[in-house]
Image 1 (cartoon, rainbow, N blue to C red):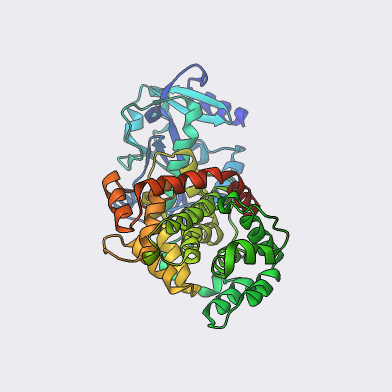
Image 2: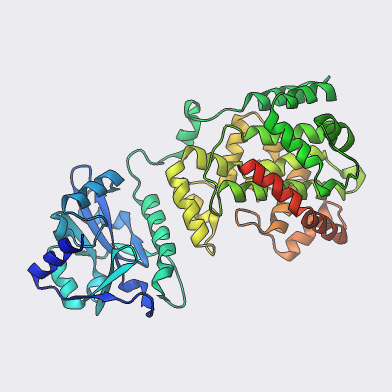
Length: 460
């Protein structure tokens, strides 16, 4: 690879030097990065600074043609054609048309990634010579606002992920998401509920459902059985006796309603798969789901008896509230992988904004659609609908509890962030004493070890 680029530089009389990425800081606007585009006939190379992303509308308006992000196999073939393993920001090297952001041509020095862990530096004249045949365009826009633009190169992957995200959301390939509602409406590509979840929903709708019937359904699914028993043993319930069977868990600790809803929430996820790692991966997903469900359950327990809704349903809303992320990870794997990476590496960014940029809707809105598709209990659907549309004032207790729990939790994926005044007002509307809220939070924290164990098992 190095011989290829050294020979190319030598032929053109280009001067270069290795950049010491360990001892120096570098402004991101001096780093040139490349992206391969396709107009459905030919490949082209766009070169932009690392702190900016392509403005596809502007580029397409200037060029009067439509562009997409090239497929990964097209990029690989392009590199193999010239004996390279990584993409370099020089269109002439690949003998394809290229565009370069004007701002880069004005920099005194340009840094580019030669290979993993190795960066090279060019002076202004050399970089301009390498871009002599490129279109010089104003085709990019900032992707990050910061009081300072100085970073060390080890920080760059976060910005590269963010740029990749904006490129994906701005220059969708054919076959990428263009109208998520159309994809969601295509039921043949969506996972249904597991047989256990379907049987639990049927049992829930029956007026003659009893504990023995519930135990029979749950017992038929060993994975769900194990989780129900493990949950009943959690310190959150403070049960001092021994729980050695599913019957013990149901009859001595949880009861019919709580068991049914806990089992339903767990069984609903059995056919959905997502990556384990990252801020939005299954490990964090289940950690948040279990804690949120326990928090909702705890808040119900400190409400006045006369206004208290069903504890099991409140638990279920907390457990299911982020299931839109599960569907994203299961159905739209490539897009979710980038979203997860950006959310992990750029935690200061607003997840809801990123989701709307890529999917056109938030994971909570996707979750609402999924609850309707699965024909989940109407209380759950109504709760999610209200949380998705907070501008519509409601007296729905489940929605108010979930909104309060999401605000109290402060998890990254929470779409509800209330001010202290709004939070206090919501506590008052629910009839909860402020001291009782703190008591519930303390109880969930004390049970965190056991809840963490449950989340780990669910993510496995």
